[in-house]
Length: 119
Image (cartoon, rainbow, N blue to C red):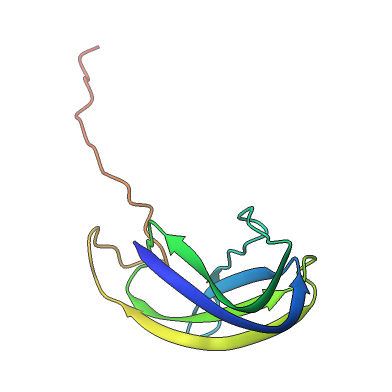
C-alpha cells in the first residue's frame, strides 16, 4: 500500500476543489492521473490548512523512475489553483512478478496444459 499525501493551505475558502495526482515517467509520459472528483470525494469547500490522502492499494508500476505532479483545480478541472510539477521523484525496483516490457504489470498468472490430440 502506498499513500500520497497532499497538504494544502487555503487563505480564502475554495469551493468544491478537486485534488489531482499525476504519475509520469521522467520523459513526461503520464501513466495515471486520478482526482478526487472522479473518485467521488469533492468537499463543499476547504479553508485553512489540511491534507488529502490518495491511498493506493495496488501500485503495479514496473521498474523505472517516476515523477508525481500534484494539483488542485476548480470543479470543472479546467482551472488550476495550484500545481506542483514533478514535486516528488521515486524509483521502482524489480519485484514480483518479473516483467520488463511496458509501465505496469497486469499481475496475471500463466497456466499451461497439453491438448488431448486423441479426440
